Image 1 (tube, one colour):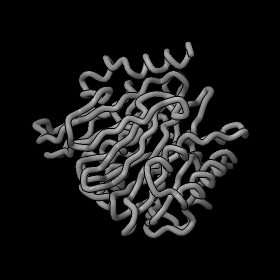
Image 2 (image 1 turned 180 degrees about the vertical axis):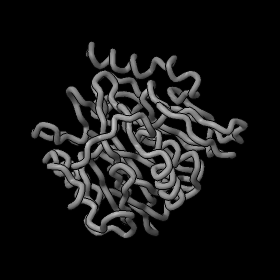
Image 3 (image 1 turned 45 degrees about the vertical axis):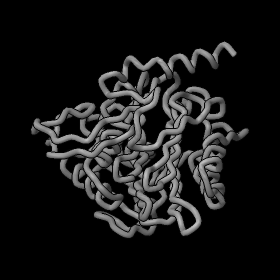
Length: 310
């Protein structure tokens, strides 16, 4: 359960990105800043497997569950933004440990200077290592992944099933927990990716996708995106701000200026949370933490406790 949205700007308005990270109830998720660096090690340990490391990785700001290496969403020092979605497909989900979708989000951010390059990075890694492994916190979950990848100039939807993929370039796009590409720009298997691989979709995913798209058409600034991310529905599973056994554990909004402005809740339930403002590249603000300190970040727990006693 997630929703990711993006819109390329024009002369009057900046490009924008946003995502609610919907995860199993009570899973802590923190904002982590990782500086750019030249890597001395030739190998890298991701959530489950070891892969080849690259010489240089970009600075990134990511939102990540504390137990995994990868990220649900984030931005790098070149203004590349990525969010991923769990998708239901006809194929059996691979429980063999490999790269999970969140690993691919982080790797795409660390290794790319543009949205197009990030797409190529993810595809290359997918072809080499595949995708698979448990993505659930308390209850095991296995799924394929779709991605919304953008910078201030370009936006792409990338949908994947196993090692197969389809890419569609857009100016405005929303993705949820369902396949959507029926007329691929680039693909390695079939042009109509949705028709071949889509499982019987949950109606809620399509409803959420339509809801965010309609609202995004008229969105012009961060306040409009906050409202989208706080949207509720009377229909079960159709809220963008989700509560229950799955909940929105963090929310991120990015305005892609020369110095991108990032807004995030840093805790569950956007409808009850304040969006904290951070200008990418400036001094870090609490509750953004270094990766070594992520398990010591008490902000998420404290905010949840405050909401429970109100």
